[in-house]
Image 1 (cartoon, helix red, strand yellow):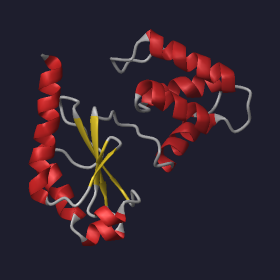
Image 2 (image 1 turned 180 degrees about the horizontal axis):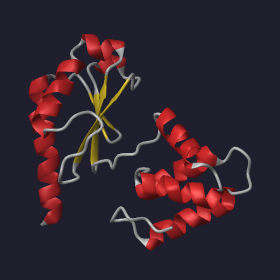
Image 3 (image 1 turned 45 degrees about the vertical axis):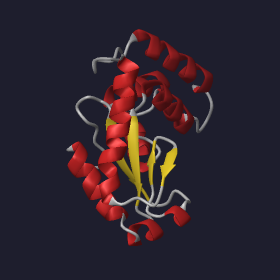
Image 4 (image 1 turned 30 degrees about the horizontal axis):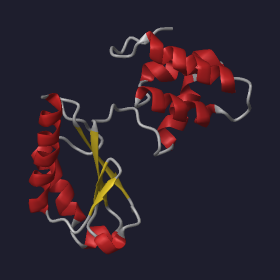
Length: 168
């Protein structure tokens, strides 16, 4: 079964085949296979789930159930830069909700969505463990703390400028 979702080439499915082959006969290996598949593809679209279901002889409904149950998995393609807004108590009390609103306004997308150009995604989490820096947003793995909504346009502009410089 080949992926019809565009952008997924045979080389990625060849990598996935190796992962499946390594884990196929191991009991309870589905989460590990899904985790590695997400690492290969960047997310778990329905076509990749169906491929795994067929190759591992597991019902697609079971795979879908696992993917939708665990927060670690995503069925949506992520942007190159993922803004993860902490909504834990300390961050929320110090204004992370307003940061999220400003981020959505500036990027024109909602939580769990990606910009048309594939550059930005927005996610939320319950705590990043940096309460002393509240409110906090991580961009990929970099922590940005003590933010106010007025800081958001500059963060976005900085990334866009770096991307433009990289293109030249």
